[in-house]
Length: 138
Image 1 (cartoon, one colour):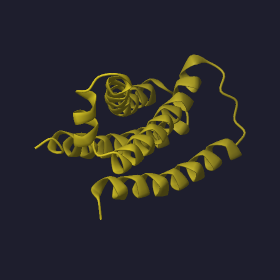
Image 2 (cartoon, rainbow, N blue to C red):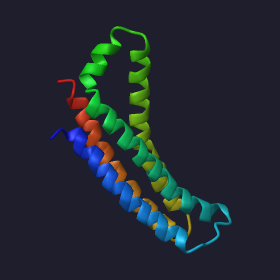
Image 3 (cartoon, one colour):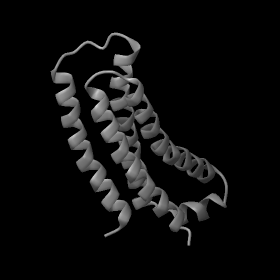
C-alpha cells in the first residue's frame, strides 16, 4: 500500500478521535473569558486545522505523485501555482502544531493538555510526510 494512502487513512482515524476530544471539551460548557483561557482553546484549534490540511495534502500526493507534479511544473502555467500551494500547505502543516504547542504553554484550562498532545501527534506525522516528500524525488 502506498505510504500516502496510509497517512490519509491514519489522518481520517485521528480525525475521528479528534472529534471525540472536541466533544469532551465542548460538553463541559465552560466559558473562555480572558486571553489565557482562549489560548488554551486555540491550542486545540490549531492542530485540528493542521490535521485537515494534512489529510488534504496526503490525498493529493496519493492521487498525483509528487515527482509527476514536479515534472508538470516545469511546463509552467497553473502547475507551478499548484506546486507552490502544495509546498506552502505542507509547511503550514508543520507550523500549526508548533503554534498550538506554544498556545498550550501560554494557555490556562483543560483544553491545553489535549491541545499539546494533539500538537505533538500532528507534528510527528508532519515529520513523516516531510521525509516522504523529500525522498519522493530520488
